[in-house]
Amino acid sequence: MLTEPTSQPYSGKYQDQEAGPQHARDDGANESSDAAKVETLVDALKTALPDLVHIAFTKFKAELHRIVPGLSDDEWETLVREENQRRERTRLCEDDCAA
Image (cartoon, rainbow, N blue to C red; front, side, top):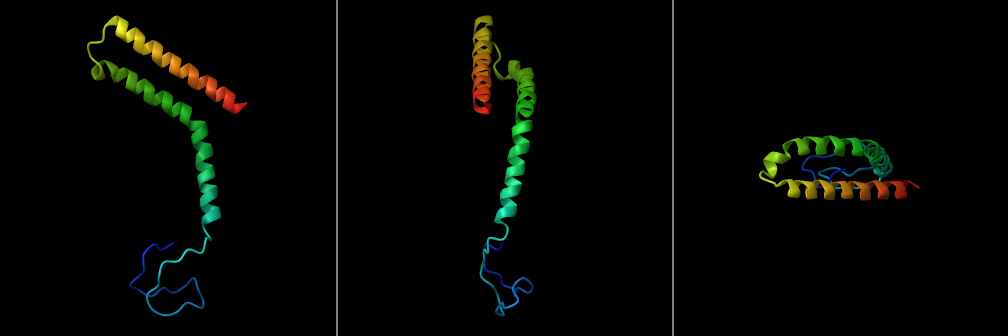
């Protein structure tokens, strides 16, 4: 789909097309194909996203001591507890949404 007028004549798609530069057109022909691509991507992300988040968080956790240096044991325990609570809420929400 063209979004800007062209400076060159278009030849090919429209048999009755006028000569000369063409204005942008949207015939909607790709909408169903685009919707199918989006649906496929969403399905793939629904499956892969939990693993991707786990990988990202594991790598983040390995670097956490550099990001928040100098946490006391109590501060660290609070951080861990809050993260575990967040994970549990997320898991419960996922379970409820899947039902």
